[in-house]
Image (cartoon, rainbow, N blue to C red; front, top):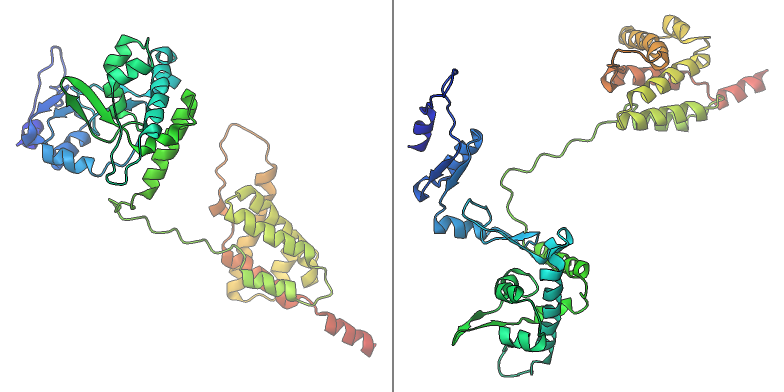
Length: 364
């Protein structure tokens, strides 16, 4: 019933204007704590305070792993009625808390470590040493009364001392100490305590089994094929020719690397350099003559036309001076892979081999 009621809600304004359809805040009991209702409220950006049933809260808490921050509270989501408490780590950001809470806590912590380490060992049972507030006052006289009053809550929420049994016996509060408190024996300063806590919490979180993802994992992005085919580059490198191919091969490899990194201007200049470098292989003076007189089939002529049109833009874009218009040139404006590979296939076919040159020299 919640959704139809809110969809039909109309709140008259004090002045002119259309009626409001969204309340300032919604309050509801456990009957309205469904996942669908909460999703609807989030979708409409309606702030809400809804009482959560115990079974829902317990189920949610079972999915919350170990954590530590600047505040400590009893539930994962904070409602209007919750009163989060500051942790000892908050004193790193609020210096006023150091003399009132952090420094006394560190003194208490090392007293508790000494109590735990001095406890007699038993082979009969795994007993944990207990302590009371009276034990703390006896070993550390002069602690602030306000700190002592809050100490049971602080010890319950801090990772170093939480866990283990606690209770009241004859009006006296007591708490058991776990062996894990010894991990803090070298934490004498506030930043050392926080650093040790962070390491322990991280190790606990990493030891938990990986949760099932709520949504399917995204499919891996397929790797882009190189701009110039690797097999073609390998064939050019293996070609035994009278021409020195070290420079064109370097240009082609740099073209592939910059295309993979999505650098359009670098690709433009490198491809322009390749077009200017190869005409002697075809026995021509410039690339226009290569296109006009080269041994191209019908499909290859289409590819060469693309490269000719690109060459005109490559003469302009990298050298145009700065102005008020935004440059729109992108990697997608480069010629197609097929056209560049067709050109380099022609280069491979027309590179004269060293063996034919030696044969002609012998015949002469």
